[in-house]
Image (cartoon, rainbow, N blue to C red; front, side, top):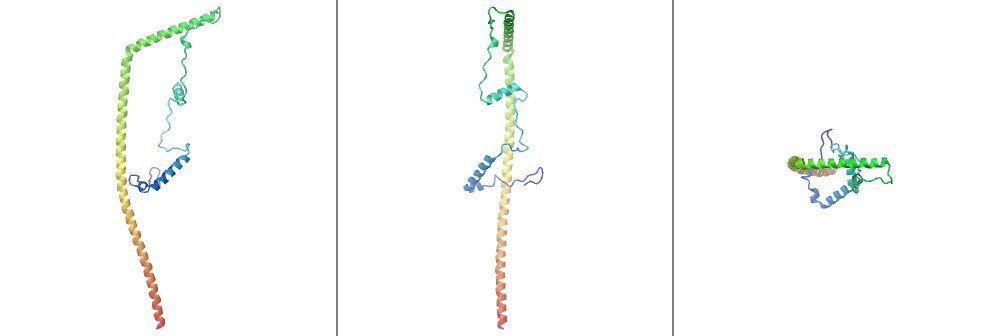
Length: 217
């Protein structure tokens, strides 16, 4: 039942209502109804406004997104291209100047590539260990922050649930008391109505008796 755009009232006290525990056949019916609703649920139905939109990973990184799609599809990892590490000679005999020039350019590119790899290896050997330690320190700090936030959120969740349980038990006792009082009042009203009916019948009998006596006189 809605009272306004930002206020909602739910007629449910899950921490107090125990009808499902009292009546096992009722629980089976509820389970069947939930299964039926879940089966008929439309996956394209609009979600609640508070549900965040789905996160699209690597939206601005097409290469990483393609790799993620490959993993989701369980496709094998593409084989490494080893042609760029080879130094093929011209295939024709005799080779033309253009073919020898292409082979020479490829050899120069391979040589430069190996020089860059050697430089990167030297830099990694000199600074890699410290960079790795710094990265591990940053990751450990981030993990501690996330764990602290998660523990704080967990404690807040426990406190909210405890408060909800206490409120529902208090309100549930009030509802039970009011329901008992309502039942007593209804019972009293029914007794009064039955007494009124009996009195009306007695009055009718006395009136009829009075009429009979008046005729005899």
